[in-house]
Length: 307
Image 1 (cartoon, helix red, strand yellow):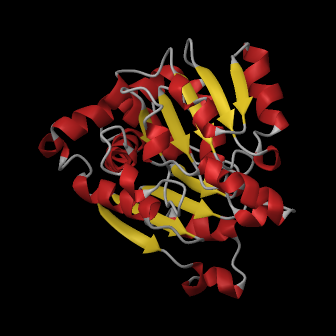
Image 2: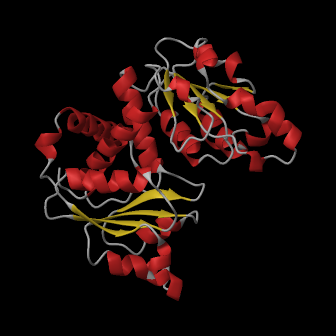
């Protein structure tokens, strides 16, 4: 039973609950009209203490498509937090007005703290570099929709793997399904953190390899998950110049990939995917955006008890 639950990190959901949400999201995608009134009379609060475009609008669109309403803020400078109000008090107040809260905060652990002071569901819409569980649901819905499931896949993560919360969350989620293998493609400066290797992959005997060049491994992948390599993460500019082009996905690299491979990206992108790739049928990152709305619709409907 998901009604009344908080979603702070992907591990808060069992495998069967993830499958339940993904299945409902697919139904909503196929037949959205049947779900247009299920949250009528319910209110979502979007509390975004740091900038967001896709995630915030996706949550708001999701609730509106379910027949509910939305209130909240996209800029914390207009809230009482500037007067010194604590997060705990903000949550106590807002939870008196609404039925579910989606919150983004730059501080790791903020969503967990909020859940301790709320009688209604808290959905973590990103807390620093820690977790982004609804992006993970988005990714899983996309993979399931386009590849038919999320087992037995070779998944490549490319770019900033050290600081990428979406990479960490999806790796944890896919590690719970049978037969998945991972390829981590990054410069040494931005490799997957040790705690992910030691706490998630090795204890579960999950196969993984590492690479520094995308073109060396792209032909093995079923899913390529791109992220941005940021110049500011390097101590040595020469290393950045030497490596940066290895992490730009272009038409030539796509020629080396499987015809069935899909390319995902949490967005926003800068230059890590060349615009020429957008027309490739394997480019799924804009489809991913739409699936994200349906994933959030399904989650909201479940947590509020509407379905």
